[in-house]
Length: 274
Length: 274
DNA sequence: TTGCTCCTCACGTCACGTGAGGTGGC
DNA sequence: TTGCTCCTCACGTCACGTGAGGTGGC
Image 1 (cartoon, each protein chain N blue to C red):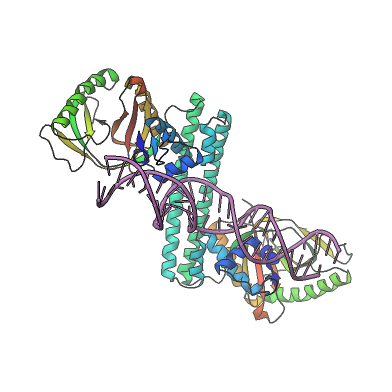
Image 2 (image 1 turned 180 degrees about the horizontal axis):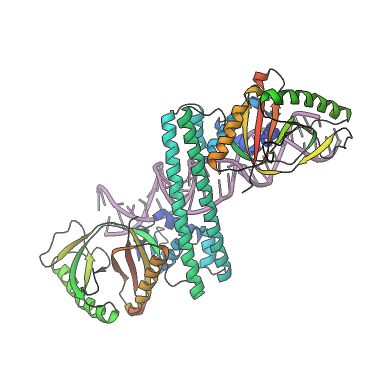
């Protein structure tokens, strides 16, 4: 007969752990002094505690362990559960590896600039969206070529949306699609979100953007003349973290009402879904 | 001005998350309707939220993020913290890898026997211990050779402990040391724990066992004639999980009062500390 | 007016760690 | 008798998820 402290020391656990297992009914003392509440353990409890600790070290929860020990789980089920434990651990290893790479990128940024980065990259899901769009093409990126294009497209687009009796359902969006080779012109799209149950208009092309499971996103503040810094940041981040761009990017004009210097634009880059 | 739901959707977080960050003072809405409590956000809050999310994805806690964002932390400190985040992640990867291997060993055991294992292996720390000991040597392991040795050593040992005026401070222990090559005799030691401040006796050798940071432990129930199964289990486990035995093993006679069939013995194998 | 959104509590998560405050055992 | 051990609450951990119960906005 050992009291709680001696039994805990023997097994290499804390007294609190024994209390906890007692509460859960996972490991009851051989007897409890009815007057003082003192728990008494015998060596017969030790193999059970060993089993609990061994299963705990595999990553099982205490309630799962309870089920296993009390034989409420078949060997088949246990085997399956052990396999799933391995899968979960593998997933966590993958997540931790990616985390290390992201931290590395952040450190590299810190080394280069020695101050907090102007662009923070966030990975998120993009909802499916229905857009009314107008298209154009250009030979080169850059504000001097894209600026005039969108200054022409967007007023035109909003006028047609209005004539079609449609309501913009969110901020305007620009889309850029990857081109197969550098000699192909770049396809640019000006879009405005509309409700999915809005009627079509013969003046407007409807473009249904499917959900994008993973996209890199960052916020650009100020004139579009300097948005290239945001794209550089997002592309450098993608390269450093090994995220592969997947098809196309978007600009969402979150707040572009006043002076260009006060504009707020979200830059999004679709990534491989993993 | 967006209300909580719209801002949350925009950023890809839950409304609850915005509430939480508001409570912490991490991200306050641009304004709160004093009458209704409605939170209103502007696009100016978005870069801050992006920074929070980016840092959160690196593994920083929200309170750490608070310190970083509010510039209470130098670039030097941040860099050091990022390095420590990587070290922590690397450690978790190591732990998860070992877990996968331990689970694999458990699955292998399940395949072989199709029932819960008779021996559960637990890794634990062994405290430093002072033993009064008697030594002997033998050419072979096995109950038929070791049994008679210990049946001679232990009564002799206890008699000398008694004559020396010492009190046994715990269950008897047997030690087995690795031999350099198979032709060397096996050194066996019978020991009984004594208090560290007990006086020495000229009839007894004192052996101070240092702390063992990592040892594999399992419980054997029944006669020592069948203890070999326990050793096989512990050695198989060590092999399967890649744990390297480190020097010596112990038998702790936890409860060896009555019939040999009711005996309870702990088998311990020192492991490389990592 | 009816859904839809928002609000504020407040509990739950998981396996204990860590006091606080009090009593029993040698 | 004095430390030492044990006991029972009960809160804290971390970042929210998930109702409950109630009100505002279009």
